[in-house]
Amino acid sequence: MSRTIIRGGLVITATEETHADVLVDGEQVTAIAAPAVAEQWVSNADTVIDASGHYVIPGGVDGHTHMQMPFGGTFASDTFETGTRAAAWGGTTTIVDFAIQPVGGSPREGLDAWHAKADGQCAIDYGFHMILSDVGDEALKEMDALVAEGITSFKMFMAYPGVFYSDDGRILRAMQQAAGNGALTMMHAENGIAIDVLVQQALAAGRTDPRFHGQVRHPLLEAEATHRAIQLSRVAGAPLYVVHVSAAEAVAEITRARDNGLNVFGETCPQYLFLTVEDLARPEFEGAKYVCSTPLRPAEHQADLWRALRTNDLSVVSTDHCPFCFKDQKELGRGDFSKIPNGIPGVENRIDLLHQAVVEGRIDRRRWIELACTTPARMFGLHPRKGTIAPGGDADIVIYDPRAEHVLSAETHHMNVDYNAYEGKRITGRVRTVLSRGEVVVDDGTYTGRAGHGRFLARDTCQYLI
Image (cartoon, rainbow, N blue to C red; front, side, top):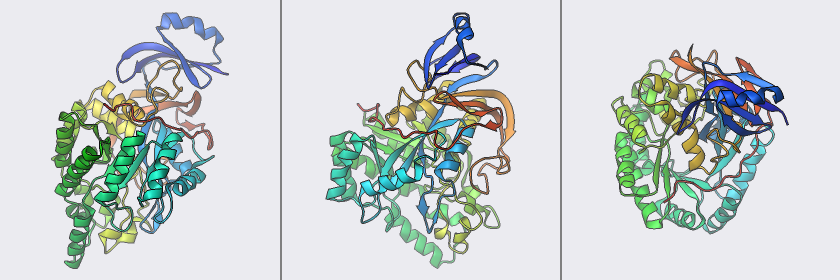
């Protein structure tokens, strides 16, 4: 096995910041030591990486991506190959994607299909959640077997009637099953039945532009569904993880539940922290680029999201990376906003955007790592193998230049999509070198990784349950 030493950097984890050197033996971290102690390692090293003036941080864990996802008659434009390569460029070394149970089929059938898509294609390690879109007796029985195989989280939708939607009875039954097998229930919390009424009313009145996507998906319909999901989880005695929280009113529901000691967790995404409903109103159909669900909100919601990230009422920042090209894909919704494929690209930009929040004083450096690396690893049963720098853990390590400035742009990003949601945004901080299980996959502007390096991760259950 090759031996690598990372020297001279500031090692940052969720709990510590220390000037130390890191020894990597093969695929794992074997030691962290003060530079004077680490000096004895140098003569036996195959590679010495100089991290002077840089941060040495864990590889990012993005717990919410959708590679090659079918939606609205098309597919997300990033494959597992292109999407995981872009993730690596941005300092993310683990993703957890969503396998989809087909309506009329079994969860196993959906999982097998996603394994076939990802196997041999990924540049970084990956796991799967399972989307339950057709809850019945057989699907419930399969949940136990899937948990035993490391698929330990199951997502359901209160939105999208006729596609992914589950009614309260199906949600309750799945949560009851999860209470028995230790799985984490993930919820897309929007009142889809009510939203569909508002969609049809808007279209009938000639309100067809992208900006109306945000208006019909009212914040109170996110809050109502979040409240209902929490109550169902209480009845079932099961933990709950609410995905892509965007509205202040939904944050309040999660905060109340956590104040009452419930196993309820919330996630938000960079688009809700850095973009607003004004982007949906961009002229010449440009707003279609910003159509996602839950939708972008008015700017005043962002203060509540940032506050909740500081207080841990929101625990994770994932991307919900689900890219569709503006040309030929987002354009499917010209004249009818309800036909615009829902999704925003971002897997490459998350680490940088959250570091920008450090620069601006919204969070500190350890919270940056906690939100982007450590908490998602613990939430989804991957810690301490992932999400930290510690002896025995995988050598997923990023050397990060905190002073480098760059501008986010579709001209320079590596995601397989023809626009960048943060086009023109100036960022301070940039990934320099990325190691995935000890192998350098990005180094100083050069990609050295390969499809097939990434391995499937069988996950343990959530490590936060009380």
